[in-house]
Length: 261
Length: 192
Image (spheres, rainbow over the protein chains, first blue to last red):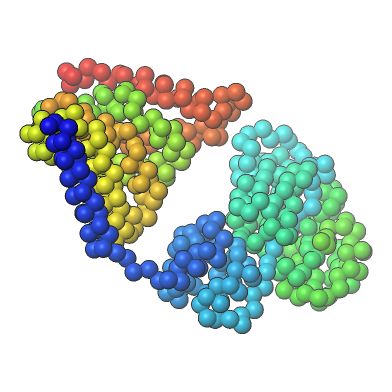
């Protein structure tokens, strides 16, 4: 008898809850845009936040509402943008892939130090105290904040200097934000040349403390004036100009601080 | 005064995590970051209060009159699982911001032993409804207090120079033990 009652009671409770859940599922039903699932499947799903939205789901919702563009997903780049354009019916857009660029070429072996830093092992912390012990107050500190920030495993630390994997890099910009010295920037993927120095120190100072730093000799500016310009003791490239032959400048640069992939 | 005693007993003196050692899995699992621990705490406060109210009513109005007290484990598990589902559906529709803030923690709580423990304890202590509510709010706030404090400590420890063989869970357990000792200091307060 007890067994019968317990089965009945438990079964009844279960049934009531099941009925309640069934009713609630109908009552609280949410009309989702059918494109949402398709868009979510296309997006990288790493929730990196580079687009400015709170994760991929948020981006997808905003895309459907028309608040962001199909090219808004920086991590997905060209491929994702084209697929999204197909879903949203806005094909024919041209999107340029970009690449993170390290504007420093001085690895552990070359960097000169004026003191030994032994504090917290992050660039952000080291940068606060005596420039992390480095003579150069513009160059890479080498504790790998960018390496830790990269959600796509595109940065390797080689001899204390980050190296970007051009195929894995999605130009999400996480490393750009992570670097306390603003050494990293994004350049168009089509441009294989970059200036691997960030130092605004005058030439003689750079010459003393770094063998691979820009000494602002202006040779590059003379050889390829379309692209290079020396401002604030530093050679600055116009990365948007692609297809210009920079080889003479790369060859003649006395400290070899202009690099090519 | 009695409700006050129940509340502080649940919050501090018999803290569910540090004194009773219930729900330790989530205590170590989601205390890596302060954000996640706060999310978990919110979800626990929300679910614990509602589920203990419903399970108290079920026990006193259905199981006790039919002399089916032995069925309470099965019934409460059923109740909690169904309730969490209901709450999830409701939140998703009505308060999507809160739903997204709680995220994965809401369904995770279905299997959290603290929720079931509170439903049991409220009955074992022979609380009336008002007392049971105060008790479950106290317990859930105690859970939040312990896990958020622990998350603060663990975030600090991530930067501390810890010996290699203590890194990760060993030092977390040692810290939890020390926190537990500290909470033992509350014993005897309010004459409890």
